[in-house]
Image (cartoon, rainbow, N blue to C red; front, side):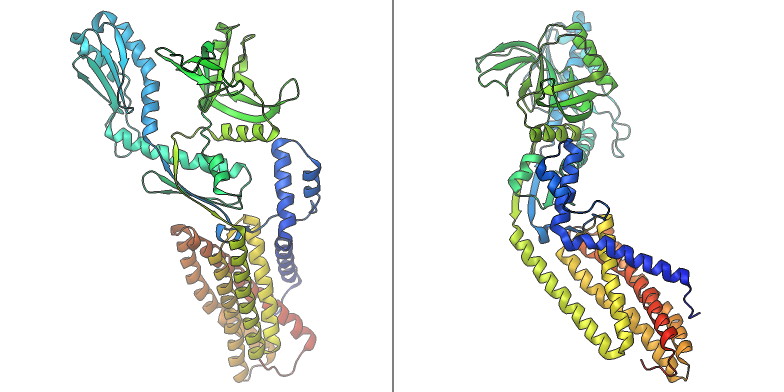
Length: 554
């Protein structure tokens, strides 16, 4: 049983070498991080500047380049607490419903008379009819637009509540639909924020829903809260509208069903546009930075089949007309339709820089935020504070490491040296695993590392004490070591398994610092069992085979 075959030694040394290689980039953190950022930027933009080329060459391509991400408390970064105005979605739903309801009521003009949309609460759609006696028919028509509520609590209910008040038809969202809409809006907002933040190269953001209408956003490594707000706060609402007219008078009344928006390219110029868009950003399937025919930065886009059909039909029927591309309530471009544009693809041109076109493509791919976000709290955590935290954690880790080594060598002599080597291997494996999976190291995570050091040698203590017991019973060196490992195994597995389960519970149910602690603890438990049982045993077997001691003192 004490025999350690060659294939096992090869497996152990291979794992140790892999741990060393994957942990190595963390010793050159700045260089590797610049290399990774340069590679990501070149892949995203397709442009390689001399600075990016130098950063990419700063680390060999053939070496692993994964890093342990530093959390907000270690690296500094930005913290935001945002409130989502879910009521904005109600207004959008009513605006989208109006053209369809208008067309239905116009088909029954003889019954309901003329119709006119009147001012109302944003969550309602109020339509005045000239023949109040036709209200029952108007209500019946409006109810045909209702659909079942898609939620567990709204089974059997429809999304619209329709009623008549004198000569006014009132359409609004039902309570079950409002609740379902609020939940969908929050989920969509969290996901869009996550996609925007992740896609621009930031590391391990924390994006969590808090309460009914708030989102917590923490991004390590970003320069300031203002920079993060500029990225997240941009709604990127892209729509395509027919142009009614162009004017230099910002006080022009657009008329019913129209809107007046300024030009982003030409200061002082305004466009009167039809309020209902032909296609919208929700129908985009792709957007990427590009260059126009003159070599200027632009953004190319492509619609899904529904958007492509609507876009193609409109351009075919309106050759020679202006067509406005609207982003966040500004006309960024209003080209003339020269010909039919089939296929649903096009290009957005403007006075962009390469960086602006890249960021716009990111925002368009991520989609529009469904509702406005108001930032209630913002903090910028400077890198100096993170550096202090890292230094404090480094001191704690070194003190703990040295104390464990001194205690093990003083207690077990040569075997303590074997345990020390296994402990070093364990630390390398932890860093290697965290680098490969892209885990985040926080200040509580450093506490988990220090705790792991003690638990790693705890397994060696159990083994060595068992060996001592067998030696006292008169066993020979080889037999005592063999029985020591075998009889300590069950206690090692039991102790680590219960802690491992606790770490998993902390990981899945906890958040923030608790989860950071759990990550290092769980990884450390798995690697410590390997290093204590396999690495230590291999070292002892190699030594025993060469020294062949007649007597053994532990």
